[in-house]
Image 1 (cartoon, rainbow, N blue to C red):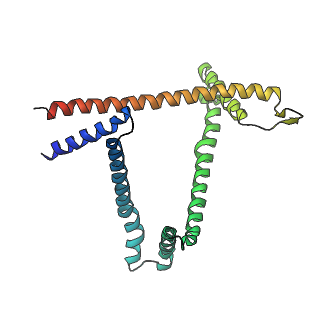
Image 2: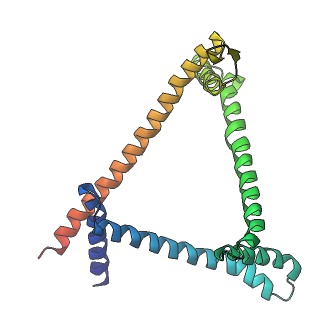
Image 3: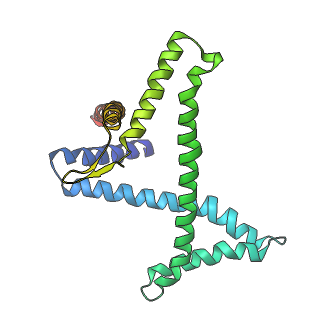
Length: 218
């Protein structure tokens, strides 16, 4: 009985979401608000259960806890809650600055070590002795050339000429156009992957609807 009830709820919510195909309507809004509310509650429960309690409350209640060290995140959290008040919102500037600074550092670190350095290493990997082969060399040349031209595409410095503004040198302009082709191919492949993933989800939902109709039909 419980499984049938949840299947019915999922069936109704699926139809409500798919009803957006005919335009915005109250059923779609109810489904979206339900999804947002459940997601917010779920993530709040996960945050309390896996972050706040084990990393803040439990250490504070421990006899060997360093209260001074644990008081720092507690104080920052309380100051962050002060942003809910207009009069006390200025108190939340410190934790917000801390969050933005740490977030920026993490993003920059990830961009450097997870993307830039990895891309540089991957561009030179086909030219190593272990990868030396005609196909490897060809792949390496295309990869290296695509990386260079793509980076040149985002180079916007040049000479300032009267009436023309900033003008890049001809070879930079030529490489930038080739880099634009590589960018277009990459974005096209990425978009195709998104479309395929969306179609897979849609087919799964349509199959679920058909199965639900067969199950719920008398």
